[in-house]
Length: 616
Image 1 (tube, rainbow, N blue to C red):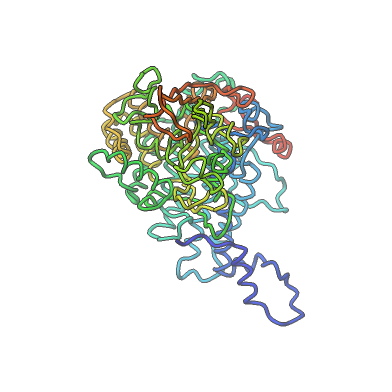
Image 2 (image 1 turned 90 degrees about the horizontal axis):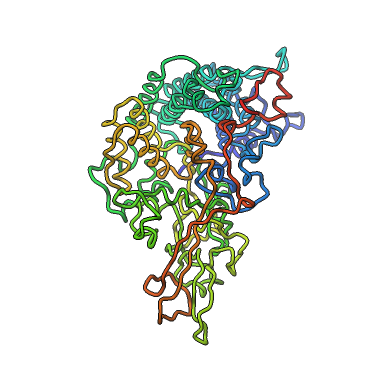
C-alpha cells in the first residue's frame, strides 16, 4: 500500500543528487531555497506533502477527544483532560488541546497552504501533466480542512486567505463572520473538487470525494441548531446575551436552504464512492456483521472502501499514532488503558432485535453482553470477551485469553473459596495502576491479529478522518430535517442492515432520535460525538452527565469448584452493578460557554481585534 512520502527524505535526496564538487558552492547543504522549491515539480510536491502533517496523529493520540464526551474517561489524572469543566473554561489555561485543534498550530499550517496556493496558481515548472493543478487542489483542500477545524472548535475566525509578510502594515486581523467563513471553506472545496476530479491518488492524499465529503460535513454543521442563531438563542441564555452572534452562526437567511445544500453535497460524494456493503436488502447475520464492522474500522478486507480521507501508518516507520493498542488496551496485557468506555455509551447499544437495552429488564441485566447490536462486539472489550493470548509471563494466569474486569471466587488448595481479582482490573497483579475505572476497554481501532503484541508492536490501522458512513449519516440527517422521512429511513437502514440490525420504521421526532443514536454507536471513538452533541445542543443532557461504569462479581454456584478463574456461566453466577465514577477522578458538568473553545489569552493579547467567544 502506498503511503505519503516524507518531505525530509525527498528534499535531502534531491539535494544530494544535485550537489557538485565546487567548494565555491555556498548554498546550505541542509536546505532548499524557496525559489528552488517552486521551480521544481518534485520539490513542490514534497512541500505540499508536508502540509498533511497538520493532521498530526488523527484521533490516535494517547489522550482522545472521546474522553471529553460521554464516550470515555481518561484513566490517568493530572493531564488537564479529566477536569472537563475547568479545562474548557479558562482562556488563560484552556486545558488539553491536541495539535490538530490548536489555534496557533492551525494557523502555522494555514500559512504553509497559502504559500503553496500562491506559488501553484501560476506554476513556474512544466504543468503539461497537470501536476501543478493536482497539487493546487490538494493545498486548497487542506486549507479548507484546517479552516474547518477552526470553525467547528472556535466558531468564526480571521480567514487566512493569503500569506502575511513583513511588508504588511499590521499583523492584526478581526474574525470574519460565521457565514463568511463557511462560504470561504466551501469555495475552496468546490475548487479542490474540480481540480482533483477523476484522479486516482495515493491513499492519504486528498481527492475529489474527500472535498465533497468535507463539504457535506461543513454544510451539515452550519445548518445545525447551534449555528442557527434564533434557535440557539432560544436554548441558551449565554448565546442570546452575546453581542456578536454573527461570529457563532447565521443571524438571518433560510435554514431550509442550508439543509438542502448539505443534502446535495452528501449525495454528490456518495454517487462517487458507495462504501462497503451498503446495498443490502436485509440484515447480515450477527457474526458477519461484527466482522464487517471490524473490517471497516481497520480498513481491510473491504473496509478500505469505507475510507475517504485518512491518516495512514506503517509499522516499519514507528509513529505515535501506531500505538493505539498500547494506549487503550487492558493493563492485564501490559497496556495503558488510557481512554476507557463509559457505561453511558455501552448501554446505548440496542438489543439485536432493535429494542432498547434496559437495566431494569431482568433478562437484560442478568446477561448484559448477550444478544446485543453486533457493533457492540467490534467496539468494546468487556468482562468475558475473548481476546488475544496473554504475554508468556501471564498465560498461566489466563490460558484462554479472556477479558477479566470483575472480582470472582475461586477455590484454593484447601477447597476454600477465596477472592480472585480480574487480571484487567485495578487490583490486578499486572500493572494495576493502568487498570480501567469503568470496567470496559476499547476494542475498535486495535489490531485484532492474535500474534500482534500491542505492548511493543506498531500497528498499521489508519485514522478515518472522513469515511463513507459519516457521509451517509450526513445525508440522512439533512433528509430528516427536510421532512423527507422515507428517503432518510432508506439510507439509514442501509447502515443498519450492514450492522445486522432490523430496519427503523419511525418518522418525525422519533426518527430524529433513532438517527442520533445510530450515529452515536456507528461512529463511536471517531471524534464525532464531541461535535454532534454541541451542534445539536444536547450537551447539557449528554456531555454534562456524570461518568459511570460497571462493577462485576462472579460467585461460584453451590457445590462448584474452580481453582483457575475463567469466564463460565455454568460455574458462576454473575451480578452487574452500575457505579458512578468518583468525582475526584472524573468530574463532569456542562456550561453553555463550552459549546466553543476559548481563544487563548496569548492569542487575544497578540491580536487586539479579536473578540472572545461567549461566556469567557
